[in-house]
Length: 160
Image (cartoon, rainbow, N blue to C red; front, side, top):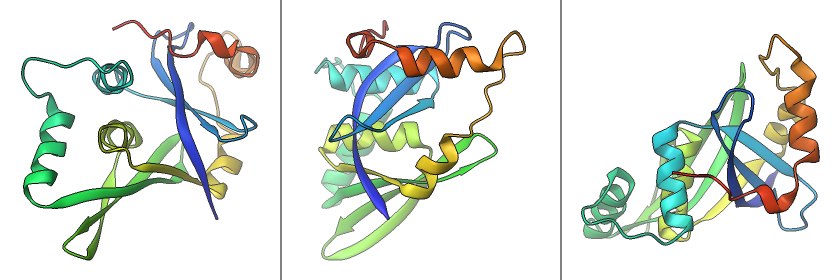
């Protein structure tokens, strides 16, 4: 079953300095942190902050190409989690035909934000994510605890 989510914010993992995008459900009961790359975090942050760049960045270019091809992103689905790696699918519609494309979640999220597409996560992924192994040899539970205790006002404080 699919659960509708939205991007709650971006932050930096204080232990690895890796960007984390945090998804939440509409009731603010479920949060899903996904560690992503710096470039994808910047693409997400730029869109969240409505920053216009002088030239199109990669995700803007893809969105423009889709528009010129008369295609639109209907939704994205984070559909799997294997060995601490998330997987996503982008669902497109073009001239009444549905298309499905494999994607990294960070790219799918950056595109979903640009196209105002809905974001979904498979319930199975939410279940699996509760057992994600955190690779911090100093204290593996520390990062999980930090994510559980993070102040919602801290989300979105990602600095580009």
